[in-house]
Length: 120
Image (cartoon, rainbow, N blue to C red):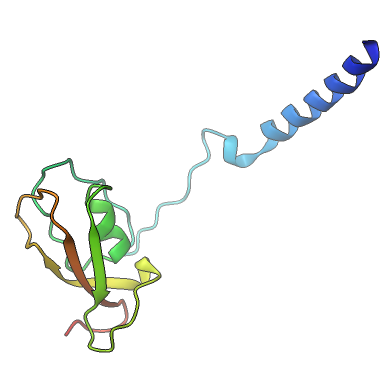
């Protein structure tokens, strides 16, 4: 019995010491703000709120403005039909439904272009 405790206590102290030294467990540890336009993640809207104006936002920021359970369809606004993979590299050019429409569970359709490209 004594042998079990002599192995357990040092192992527990080691694990607790490693967890205490982890910078990600520090409650004061925060990420620096990203102040580039269109890259900041805004606060999400409440359910059944009016559709926000998403044009000019990155796709990532636009999705953050919508409730999490809303179905969102994102496609390339260019006829090439590229796939939108990295959402912070694409800017919303058009949206459906239009801004101000009450969201009632309908699919939100976003047409986007790469950030460095002009909208058609």
